[in-house]
Amino acid sequence: MGVDNFTSSAEFILVGLSNDRGTQILLFVLILLTYSFTLVGNLGIIMLVQKDSHLHTPMYFFLTHLSSMEICYVTSTIPQMLAHLLMGRAGLSLIRCALQMYAALSLGSAEAFLLGVIAYDRYLAICHPLIYTTAMGRWRQLQLASASWVGGFFVAAVCVIITFSHPFCRPCCINHFICEIPMVLKLACDDTHTTEFINFLFAGTVILIPFSVILISYGLILFSVFQMQSATGLRKAFSTCGSHLAVVIMFYGGTTFTYIIPQSGRSPDTDKQIAVFYVVVTPLLNPIIYTLRNKDVHEAMVKLLQRP
Image (cartoon, rainbow, N blue to C red):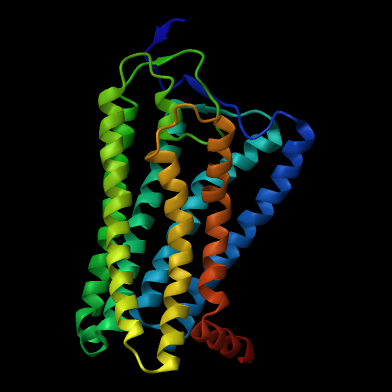
């Protein structure tokens, strides 16, 4: 097998989810419906928060950013998946593969940071309600949200640049439906141990630091909640934090399996199934989880529907 330095005209071939034409059409319909519901759900949260002044709080400010990230994330991956399923062919140039990888990785990393911010916000609101308004003022909200976006784009830039600094062996066939770092690095013709180690460090930083913040924040919240004498306060705390924890478990479970746990001995089909979950399913579930048991959102929706 020859070794070629990739050029912008070279092409990665994505194997995709299935080679069966009937299965491809079925998946196209299902993923298109999921994508549509995801856009509607997340756009609905953004519009609801903007329309209702009672939702102009730090938690809902961060939720609008989370919904924005989800919209951008699914739009960076799913339209490409749909086009490949419809045409039955999945080819990407190096530039398109790198751009798709960068967009998905930057938005996923930003979401990881933002989930840590939301946990910190809930900790202040429940454990320190008297100083919450001052500690989480408008300027602090903007700082934390901006830091999440910038941190995500910076991490992705470093990881994508070092990944595509390698020469690749032709034919460049990726057993996946999107360009992800572990799968692309398998095609490199030279030694990738240093790149894999750097990517592992960045993945560990993006996953473990926010996850540690989440664990500490919710540990302190649980300690504070069990000291409460009010049943209403207990219910409200568990309702607010329970939805966030559900999102955290889904998000960090998939990303940890893909970027932290070694892939040796694991079936490529397993990797694709996990990727379908965090690329397609999780962005749909987030708006449902955050609104299903949220009284404030229910009341805002009723008000909006009752307007003439």
